[in-house]
Image (tube, rainbow, N blue to C red; front, side, top):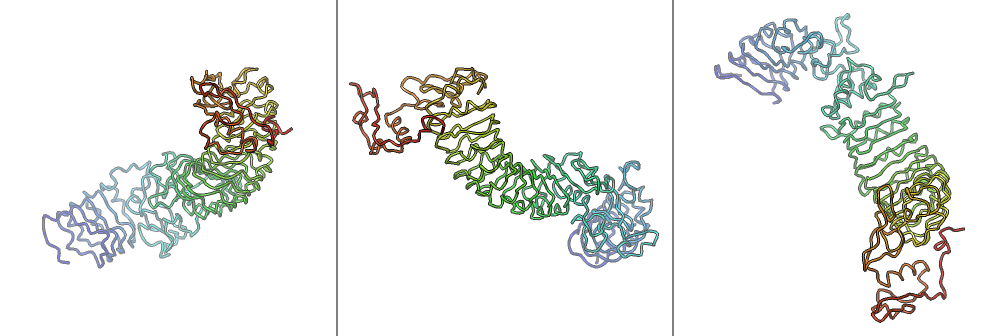
Amino acid sequence: KDWPNSANLIEIDFHDNQLTGTLPTEIFQPFLAHLDLSDNKLKGSIPKEIKTSQYLRYLGFAHNSITGTVPLELYKLFLLKTLHIYGNKLQGHMMDAICELDVISDYVRDEMPPCKNMVTCPRGYFHPLGHATEEEDCAVCPHCHPEDDLKDRNCLFLGQTKCIDGTLVTNGDFNGDGVLSDREVLRLMYLKMNNEEWDKKYDSWANINGYPDACSLPGIRCYHSNLRVSEIRLESVGLGAGTMGVGLLPQIGHLNHLQVLDLSKNNIMHIPSEIRNLTMLQHLFCSKCGLHTIHPAIWTLTNLEGLDLSMNQFSNQDIPPDIGRLTKLKELKIYRSGLVSSIPNEMGFLTDLNNLDLYGNQLTGELPDSLGSIANLSRVDIYSNNLHGSVDAFAKLQHLEILHANSNLFSGTIPTFHSQKLAWIDLGENSFVGAVPASLGQLPKLVDLHLGNNNLFEIPDSLCNTNLGINHGTKGNCDHILCPIGTFAFGGFANEIKNRSCEPCPEGKSTIFLGSVECSVQAVVDYIEPFLSLVNDRAWDFDLLEVDDECQLEGVECDDEYRVRSIEFPLANLEFDEKVFTGDSS
């Protein structure tokens, strides 16, 4: 308490040091310019001796327990530029004389809150900062009534940051009534989820006094009947997980009339369990949100019709059987997200589904037969996974328009598709065998057919001679369906629009199947192995990998230079599926 009386003492900074006691009068030295005692436990009043420090430019007493009133001497510190006295137990009124100090030198009366409020909120009002800002004035506490002399003890003090004891503004209750309104939740989202990155047009989200109606905010729609928030659309606005990395705030669960929530292309990183409270939610879009897990609460939202969780990082996570609970789902998108394991059989419970988009994951296993029961399915994209088996589950769907199954491990024959609406079929980069089914030429809307880089060896003339213009080809030219053996092209077919033709293989190289994307040097075993796979390995009873001299194989004829001239397969005991060679099961 014994302060040195020194003309050299110009700065004292003891903020946030757990200091107790009262303000010593000796602290106010004549040349003191900076005094910060904020965030301590100081009591008592502001002493009149403050007038001694006429050179004060910064004065900080915020967040203590200082009592009394603001002394008249403070108004005479004409060099003062920064004044923090909110968050105490000061009473009385802030005088208009404060408006003459430099602390509000940039004040513009017509565009900002009352100048006194910029220093500290008056009694019966509050603000999260304890004072008004350029954008937002102090708000009245609902239980404080000036006409009743503010007798409520919660209404006695200047610079309050909350109204009701224990109900902090940082939890979202802006008006202090103990209940979170839709408007308060939106304000809290703005304050806590990286608002500095948001587009400027969303600044009104923070100004609850200037914009008390949530329905007038950009990105928001409401019900006309009760003015409850029904849609939040914030795609790519800069929304973030906040400094604490909380992600989407748990208070989102209070918006229980919400039907649409679009947070796509915002790095929110986490969806809270409280999302289960959004029982009216119909559309949840959170693609490219930086998510690392699919919260199980999502599978409880049984009114969902659209779900997009694409382009997140769900590494080593699968699609759980609980997805079968979303029986109203019409659109499911979880592409390029690192999903593993197989597609669950419960996916077949989504009988209203018309768009299934799972491309670019690491899904394995066979397609469940239950997918064939999704009668309304019109678009399927399972490109670039590790799925195997057949695609027969999609063959009988009557409304299928697009099937994109390129770059998987599918095998067997290409099925006969029943949908007359099919416009695009992409089964390239798999291991389909046999002939292309002639029934494809009977699909009246088919314009894109990609079958390259499989093990196909026959195209029916009827498919080449259709008037459909498949792959932009001309009638009678099969190259636009699949390149002939001995030629290659990108995708395995010619494309006149892109001026891409089937090129002959270089000398010494060839292809075995139609629709090749490259040529290579072929050995006899390269021809024998595919044939044996078609006839169930019954033709020859030996291991081709152990054969040293191909010319010694039964049925292989070579010339004098040991070059293969012909191959004759023995026909005894052959077993094969007729569909392999006809292309259709009929």
